[in-house]
Length: 304
Image 1 (cartoon, rainbow, N blue to C red):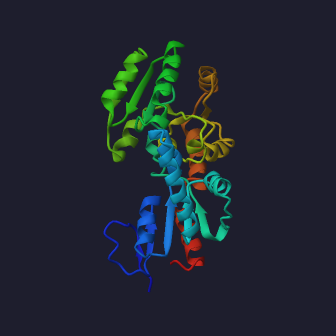
Image 2: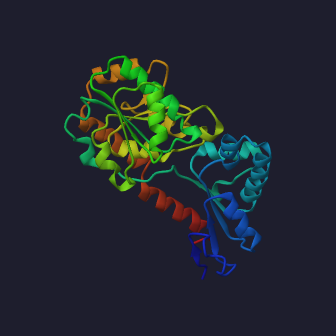
Image 3: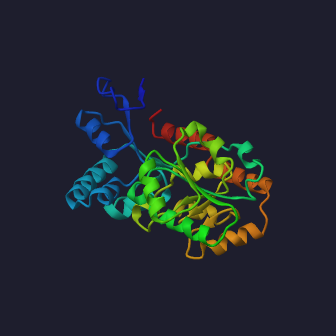
């Protein structure tokens, strides 16, 4: 019987017949070099491009790209976070990745928290939030600049709450842009729903790059699960496709203040938001659906 190993850490003493699951290309290479040939690889980001964003090193980019192509060709099964990611790999490396050998599911980390939608005054106020790190591709400084425009436009009771571990760095950026009403804190993920229950809008702004075009950031599901209306960049291709059927989302643009005012003027009923976001979780962020679909695919591939 094949034993399913969920992590490479401490797993290399296992039988070479075991299925090895890697969440990055370096771990996948390590497993392959140690003789494991039954590889399932979960591609959670385009690592060569992410590395280049951080280090601006073409040497690192080339090495990681060669490793990535090797892993894509050798893996028995591949998990992608979006169809855009699969198309990117096929174009970049000239590969044909058969449907039977891969599965696409977005990054998600939560389910709907209905109580967060019903918080008194949630949609009457103007509390904006940002959740996450201050990594370069997160565009935190641009996010702060964007909020400052909203604040300067006179949105009643506008407040910006930033949830990040990098609190001092965040405060420096907020001070730089002379944001008047803000709060910076860090809370564990388990406590986020309670803190997001008062928030109306959540920022997720990205540059137009392949890193972002293939991404499905978990913070979108975090926002939606708590009734926080996302202000998102349309370069996030997978979610933008989903958002095309939604009312309670705001695509980021230079006319953001106008879009916010238009949505507020139309009236926001928390039950309408809950209904719409529940439908999104049923069809796009449905954990049970992905578990069943992935299990079926792995079984067809003879891996479970």
